[in-house]
Image (cartoon, rainbow, N blue to C red):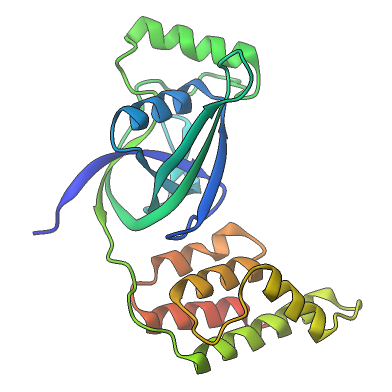
Length: 236
């Protein structure tokens, strides 16, 4: 039987891949609580792309497949303790089986960037009890990572598709192929021994919108992954 566990969820306007680094600046009270709870536990939470078609108690809803983020560093920004800077790294993908709503619904006209908005949330939290969770949680099951090898032939084909897409998008400006080779070097994507991480990184370079990367994260076999990346990089 597949094991599940409950983890905090952080919906963001991005897709986090396994082993990818993700720095975050934390300023909302609900996510400061999330980080505090993680630091008292195993330092892990789930990062999911925002599902623009749904909400949870008025807050941004997560898509159903995300990636575990492990906090590797946490520090205060400034002396007021109002902001945290954390560094994280992606681990296993997971699938949400059940969403656990936050204890506080989003207030009307809530501004996450304002002091007034933070004070309003903090006041509500004190009234219902500070032990209540202000952030979304979910019961999740882990998705095994793709551990199949990547053939050099497949990799070189994907690189060619990526170059064609970038050149096409730049028109009428002309992009020289050697310029794109330099970009690949900058992102450490020049290799004769490609891995799944190289494919994830190339996908990120070829996507205009994070929603284009969600199907890549949801691929569970190398064949499926290659197919979805080819779709992403093919000029329509």
